[in-house]
Image (cartoon, rainbow, N blue to C red):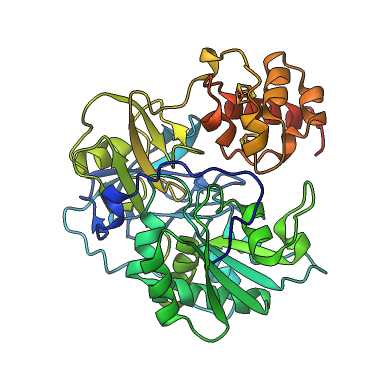
Amino acid sequence: MGRAVFRGGVHPPEHKDATAGLPVEWAPLPERLVVPLSQHLGAPCKATVAAGDRVERGQVVGDIEAMVSSPVHSPVSGTVAEIGTTLTAAGSVVGCVVIDRDEEQDLDSYVAVPDGDDRRARVRAAGIVGMGGATFPSVVKLTPPKGMEITTVILNGCECEPFLTCDHRLMLEQPERVVAGAGYIRDMVGAKRVVIAVESNKPDAAAALKAVATEGIEVTVLPTRYPQGAEKQLIYALVKKEVPHGKLPAAVGVIVHNVATAAAIADALELGKPLTERVVTVTGSVARPGNYRVLLGTLVSELIEAAGGLTGDVERVISGGPMTGMALGSLDVPVTKGMSGIVALPKGMAAAAVSDDQPCMRCGRCPESCPMGLEPYAIANYAHRAMWDAAAKRDALDCIECGICSYVCPTNRPLAQLIKVAKAAAMAKGVKA
Ligand code: SF4
Ligand code: SF4
């Protein structure tokens, strides 16, 4: 293990102890599931079932013919109550299939994805998307553009966000699934090198992976430093190449998949298993923190109930980790494919809101810590004045939304939130990186 391998970064308190030592357990099955038709980046699905239809666990309930898309499946056997809409963790409203489950459920049985030689087609049919939070359909990453050679596959097991331990538990409890997924991804893209990257604060997970790693699959331990798991920082740390502005990792011959995605790919190819559940860390101010295996479409409110309910003075409940996650406006939103954690933050730990902005005292911490070498205070100032072109000229579009600038600011300025707004506005205007 070497020293820090990217510029900037921070080491915030980890807050992982409450859940890192606890084995994954099933969350209670909800009576009714709200399955969003858009759990991925790309074209939303259209429902392929109607109210009153019987559905089986694993049956496709939504799909669409589009290059960047991913089908959704019923996580239970039951009856479709309604095709409607639901609020999501991101605050948008999307179509959904509401399913009332049968009382008896056999979670070991499901409708398998069609068999066949085309592995990519089976990965798509299983609805696999980036489970680290990006939710990009995996089949698209597994199909690099013509003329682009992929030499290296990186599996991201860094889990550098504070509080989250779902990937840690997966690597520890089911390392052979992660390693199998790594092998399938390598074979599909024709890469020579496969590296599974784990942060140094998870030595047991790294050891578990090393114990089952097959020939040609490296397990590399990287220093614990946020945002080690960010794609560009991870690629630089492992292959010493910078992804050019506005390009994908494939441009430097690399693809990065999250470890949970790799395990899901192995399940799809070996067992025909569609993606209908995932492990979610539920932690912070809850009575029974833990890692829960959750059916997609379970409401966050039910999941928090499974964890014993909120305790103390909770200021905000976050979907994902506290550095990059989203504050939930409502707890009645469904768990989706990219939801790695639910973190209940007590008063004093939540980041400031944009409306709480304070003046800059020019301390220099935000430019020092930004892993992309940006000047967050300056971009945020332009964002405040809706000067989107000026913000873009200061490279706002290179921001990886890691949240570090907000975290280090002594006056608690919501820098990352302002820069995110500037990015979205600049992109809407067609400004290029
Ligand atoms: S959120 Fe963006 S601007 Fe702020 S530290 Fe991270 S990369 Fe830099
Ligand atoms: S960290 Fe905050 S106070 Fe310091 S330079 Fe950046 S914006 Fe200003």
